[in-house]
Structure formats: C-alpha cells, structure tokens
Length: 422
Image (cartoon, rainbow, N blue to C red):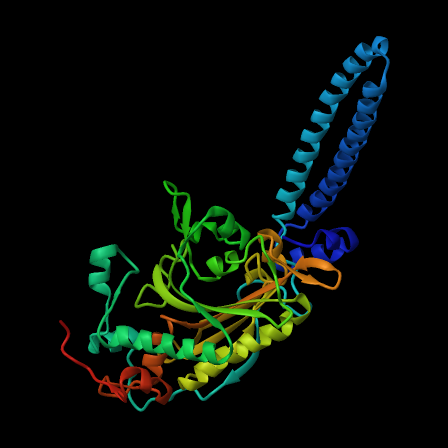
C-alpha cells in the first residue's frame, strides 16, 4: 500500500501518479476523507476510554451510598466505549480498503500512458540477417523433437506442451547458467512453494486488476503463483530484517502458472504465451534509498545473460499504465524474434519501493527505529528464452548453434541437430 504520510503531506503526487496510470483519481480524495473520519473515530474512542478509566477510579473510591449510581453510569459509558471502538475499527478498515485501491506511486521520469507508450532506452546487438527463409521456433523445435504441442494439448489442453529431449536439456541449461550467474552476484538460491495463501498473493498486489490471470483452488484457499516473486515476497512477511550488511538477494527457481485470461487469439503458436512455464526470478529486499541503484544492477545482470546467449535486444522503460499495481518503475528487456520481425519480452524487472513491504509487514531496523523495506524483482531466465535462442541461432538445415556460454551445461554440445520425431 502507499505511504499514509505521503497521502497526508502530498496528495497531489498520488493524484498525478494515478492519472499517469490511467487509474482512478477520485479514490485519492475518498481516502483522504476516510483518513479524516478514521482519526476522528479514534479520537472519540480514546476520549471515552479515558473518561471510563477516570470513572472507574471514582467508583473504586466512592462511598457506599454513591456507588450504585456511579456503577450504572459506568455501565452506560462502557456501552458507549464499545460502540466507539467498533466505529473506530470500521473506520480503520474503510481507510485501509481505500488505500489498497491506490496503486504504487510511480517514480519521476516514468512515461505516462499505456502498453504502447514505453520509451526505448537502448538497443544492443545486430539483428540476425538470413540468407535463407528462417523457420519459427516451433518448426525448429519440432525438427529437433524438442517441443510437443499436440501431446501437451491432448494431456492438459490448449497452451500446454511437452519439452522433451534437447528441449528439456536446453531449458535446464539456460536456467543453470542463470543460477550460476546469480550465485556469482551473491544471491541465495531458493526453490519456493508454488501454492500460497490469499494474504500473500494479495499482499504482493496480484489480486487487483490481474486477478483473473491467477489460478485459485477454492477448496484449499490457495493460489498457484505466476512467479516466484510471490512466495519470495512472503518469505519475510511480518518480520524485521537486518540490512546492515547490504541487500538480501534471493534467486527463486519455480514452475509458474498463468491463466492468460483475455489473451485468446494472441501468440497461440508455440510457447510464447502458455499456462505453465519455469522461471528463475531474482528478488531483493533493500533499503528505500538503495532501491533505484539495485534496480539498475538487476537490469545489468539480465543484459549480461542475453549478451552471453548472443541475442539482440532492447531495454524499455515501461509506461505507467502498464506497470501493474505494485511497481513504481519497470524495465523490460526484449529480444529480437526474427520470424516475427519484432522484439518480445524475455525479462522484466520492477522496483516496487515500499508498496509490497507495507502490505506484508516487512521492515528493517535503522537509526530512527523500524521502517518498511523496498522490494525489487526481475527475471533471470525462463522457458520463453528458447524462442529467441532457437530462431536467432538457426542454420539452413534446421540445426541450431549452441551459444558458447551454454555448451558446458549441455555436455559440450555445439550444435542441436534435427532428428526423427516420435
């Protein structure tokens, strides 16, 4: 949730943020009114409770002939205190509900607008030119007997698939390369649970406008996660962290699930937009003053991975309306996909400032007591990388050159050769 102090001190900053996102500005005014009502309700409760305490002392010290009247008065006052306590609780909940409807305040410089209003920060690498008609990733993968979409659909339905043989090995190689890079950078590897409680899913901000993309198991009151960002954010919920030695960095390797609601008809061929995939996610807890510098470091580690795999890419500054409710700024790294003649997102990294930490009760101890930490997340490897890798490094005969950085993870294999499909 947003900082209540900012709501009191600079509500215009929150209004500007909501406007740049294309979100409700009226909810800010409603929250301000609710805050005023909350304070008044708490004040009235505290006044009546103080009066009750004072009357209790009078009852204890009163002569016998006065006690009966005072006891009756105390009973009447107790009912008023109880009513005022309930009113204060209701006002607190109303204020909390409204502030949770306000999205994270975007950072200065984030472009306003929606999905198409991003700003390109840089393009890196030469786009591959072919002296032959390139195949798309699915045609290549089927030639390698690496992906089986038909049997995936038979077993689980549309947008499911089998990675097999070279496909399975290739994904594991990419993930292991990413994990080794994360270890070099000081990340702690984690294999987290992929089912989480509602309060964890809600605390990370995934039950807002994108709730329809989340799989829910009502019989168990658990959600399947679409990224290990969710359980890693919940890892330290309601804790006070020691960040005196620097950020806490985790690399979560997990299977992820997304319903992809509203995306039907888009990217239906192959494994660009699917319901299940694997991902290595970086997650960081740090102090708010270090968050922007850490954000840049996350992007640097992502770019290092793409460069090692010989992929052409661009980095974009995502517009406010496409950030999601938790992010104050997000950079996407998009690889060039030759057969689509377009850049497609391979990694995303978000600075969520203190938004998630406030919702999840995560604080650190400093000179002036405890205060909310900042959280950041960023993809370091995922199944979708296979798309750009196969298309970029394909040869005319349908074979695929293995980038040198991946070869140690594939037993020294230099070329993926087509094989008879079974």
